[in-house]
Image (tube, rainbow, N blue to C red; front, top):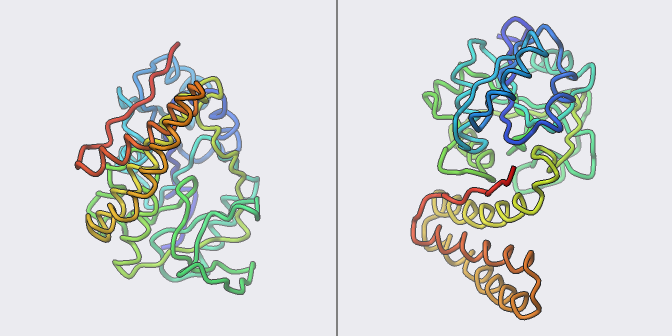
Length: 294
């Protein structure tokens, strides 16, 4: 079954994303239904979106569940055969949807197909073993993994594979898309990039810039935690510990250094890295959440 506007919907997970979400929504065709999953209880944000855009409905999760869990909510609520998940800091080109539809007609079977990032210096995909492959940009090409900021799901196929357990919700931030792609490959299903379908990813702009320090603290904690959890899940505890321990030692040394020179920001960053490793190593859940001051 090929993609059409009638069987395609879009899911966008947001949190403190007021500064970028409107540009994202305005770049999407008005005849495509959009579900915004806001990871809070911000009723003002919900009302603003639903009054401003007729094709948008906003679901409040009432707490910050993370990207994976938020996307799962939106995908499960979608009633279409195909669901395009987007980060709020992604902007579509006028032809993005059309080219995705055309690309889907050129391949017989796919679990995920995705547009390509317009920034060639930061590709949103990887090949098997990071091999360089000659690409014909007129046709979709098969990849090993796709970055999670823009992925179009063949929902019926993924339901057969995962039974609605799309993203592993143990990941709060980082590597949830790598885990998903790995499980798709293990299920012997295919993922493609549609090279004529392009998007612009602003990168790191999903949360309002005024919270940049808190976001940086969270990123450092969750990157280390998620890396340990990913390696433990797919390669075992010993491999996860062995790969992560040198970075833990390095982070602890850097924390002491910045403590001595009284650089509070860097001090907190490296403390969070060390804390992320310790919490993952003792099998604690990904509990760290940023403290945003209004």
